[in-house]
Image (cartoon, rainbow, N blue to C red; front, top):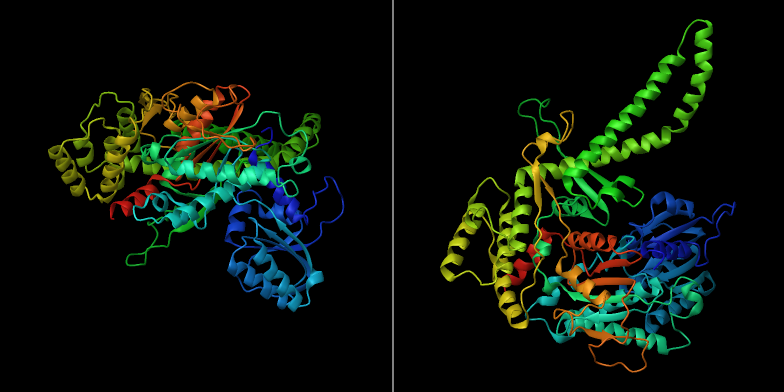
Length: 632
């Protein structure tokens, strides 16, 4: 996978916006002006990849939602990018009847069925607009790319394929089939865009296995259909592929429920955990100052600010996987280097204002003109730098407030100890009943991790004591009901997962590390350093990618859609280690696992891993799903 999935999907979108012909580089002509009409799904796919400015460069003057009131613009072509749903198709037919645009380029995010195509054809006939419908394309882009090496299936109807939806006790077979079909449709789109047929491995007896069977069948059918196969020569783009195929590891969320609840210590995962971070955009509430409002006045409304954290943001790319204390320090350093540059420009300005005609001043002038020219040319760069510094100062400060208010460093360290089965320096009951440490949700997360990781479930008497402490702390106990059932069930199925035995090492408190002039008051926050340890998902990948024999993964099923006959075996035909792999978690994933995989693969030269999940949730959203399951 020489090119990341992000690049591939962006290229596919640009091609679509260019009326499905590859955009020509360095053409000087104006782009054709056009309107882009998308639904919410299309919006979610485009927004992490293309900015408004990039859309404008592609000739998109207006971008509108399909179901909004749109005025007719009769002399402009319209590019549609929507899911082939009943209501979308109805609305498109209505557009044709109302003759809104000059021509229509219809692009479906996922493949459209024959009958729906006929509906559009009939509408076009009825509106005598057949000639205006220029192209109809299936784009196979039904997934959202968030990073070069990370994607998520969908965002709009994620409740339909959530952990809760898959694990409900009363789910009917037909519902389960529908959920699996949705997941498989997106994964199929992913591989079409990637242009590769994977070798599939999955655990037995789980939702992941159902996905594997269906995906294998779908890929197989497409390969057999020689006339319409999406995986033949020219669509793939020659030379993209080494002859090695990627490995797809399908994992079920149930193999590891502790990680999604875990408090974290790296920047990106923290932002996702404590702030409102969604499709690469973080929304912050700015606390407004109280001091200048007169007594009795209404409190000021909080300003909402949103920032995009994109791959173009160098600071984010470099530090999203760093432990938080390092991030705070780096922001500070960036700020200082920026101030130094700014002072240099100011100094030059004051010199340029020199009076008098004496020789010294003249020679200085010619010398400084060169300096000033370079300073002026670096201004845009400086301003961009300033914008990024401000952005990360605000985001990091918001995160820091949470860490301090909720003692997240203490939680993180304590949970790491539980997960690595090391000795605890403080009893769990004390942690739960400490009124200053964390929100009720933090305490519930801590207790669930303890419960999930305990080899022997706590005795009834102990459990009652914990429950009382949790209730006193204001926790909602419904998630525990579900985790209890899950643990009883998981115990029958397999041994408990282990999380390695590395723990975070404190480096002493921050006050000494940070210089006194810093904006981040890190007093009392522990400076924890992470040790690389593989989470269960990473361990499974490691076994399968490196072809290691391990009881945990030896009975994983093996599918190869290119083989003529599917065989139900666990024995891989190919004994060589893989260079490229995709890990996909059915039932939802998180940035902690993503970061863990990124760190793991850094140590392997020339290997690539992509992380995908059916939905991306943080601990709060996951606990919510668990408590819905626990209410049954």
